[in-house]
Image 1 (tube, one colour):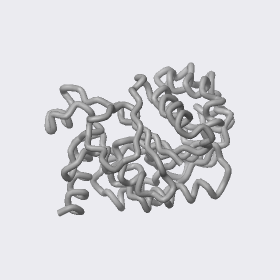
Image 2 (cartoon, rainbow, N blue to C red):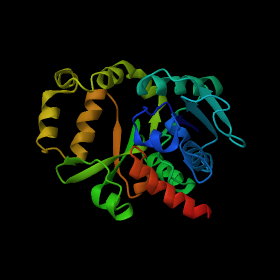
Image 3 (tube, helix red, strand yellow):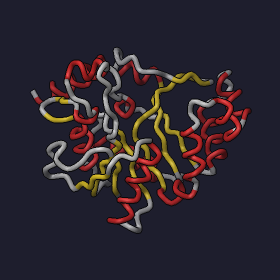
Image 4 (tube, rainbow, N blue to C red):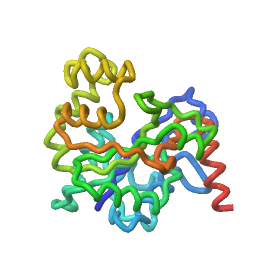
Length: 257
C-alpha cells in the first residue's frame, strides 16, 4: 500500500517555532540531524505494509530523501484538496489501490512497529475509514508535559491521532460532503445543517460517547467509520507548539546519541 504524508504547513513569522529554528516549512524542522518529516517517512517506509510514499506540500530537493520511494505533489491549499491530490498521484502509479494510509508530517515519534500494529488493527474489519484517538490518561502517562488539547466526551477525554487508513474509493464517492463539512468548520449553523443538530447538541453537552460519535459521523458522511481508542500515544504526539518540539527533540536525539 501507499502512504500519503501531508506536509504543507508553514510557520508564520511570529510563531515561536520559526523564531527558534528559522525554518518556515514546518515539516522541515530539524530534529536529531534530519528534518521532522524524514522521521515520519522512515517509520512509514519501514513498515512491512508500505511500499511507496506520496508527499503533499514539498518538492524534490527540500530535504534528503535518499533511499525513499517517493513522489511529490504540490499543495492545493486545504487539507481535503491536498489529500485528494495525493490520492490522484496514487491512482497514477497504482490504479488498483484500495486502502491508503494518511499521515501528517508532524508526528515524528511513530515507528515502523507502531505503523504495522495500526494497519493490522484496521485490516481486521472492513471499515471505510479508521481514525485514531488517544485517551487523556494514556497520553499523559507517556508524555506528561505535552499539554495536548483534549476533546471531552461522555466517558473520557481524547486527543486526535494523525494517522488514518482509508478506503480510497469510498471516501472519494463522498468527497463533496466531506469538503463541505471541512470548509464549514468555523460555521456552527452550517455544520449543524449538514450533520444534524442532534449530533451537535449531544456533542456540546457531552452526552455522546465515542461509539455514538462514530455512528453519527459515519451516518452523516455516508461512510462506515471506525474510531480506534489507541494505546500508542505517539500517534497523537504532534508538534504544534515550541514545548512539544522540545519534547520530541529530546526523545529522538537521545535515541541517536
